[in-house]
Image (cartoon, rainbow, N blue to C red; front, side, top):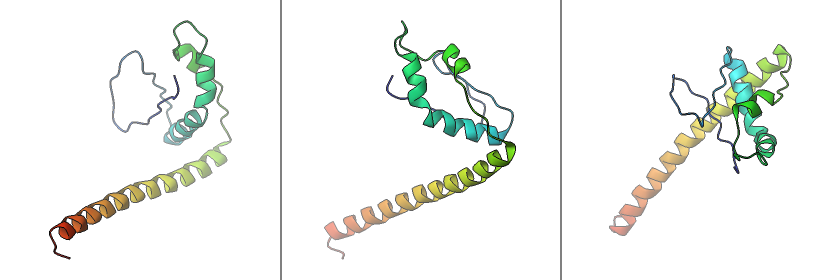
Length: 114
């Protein structure tokens, strides 16, 4: 109950009753809701505490109010979020490449090849 995992999927998925799905029709709204829920997770979790089951229910999600900005702002958000996601992916790739390079150098150093 300390965190609220939120994910977007690009393919159809199956899951059990402990996972909730929100199915907006527009990709831009999906991105916006994804970020909104991540940012608002503490509010949702506070609402879930104190109930008998100590869990976030479908009713909690249904009652959670989301402000949807005008479409022009959603468009701007979408574009910025896409840039951030692309940079994050590139950062992950570069980090992995640097780790591989470091490990390669480390092996060569231990073999006395440097």
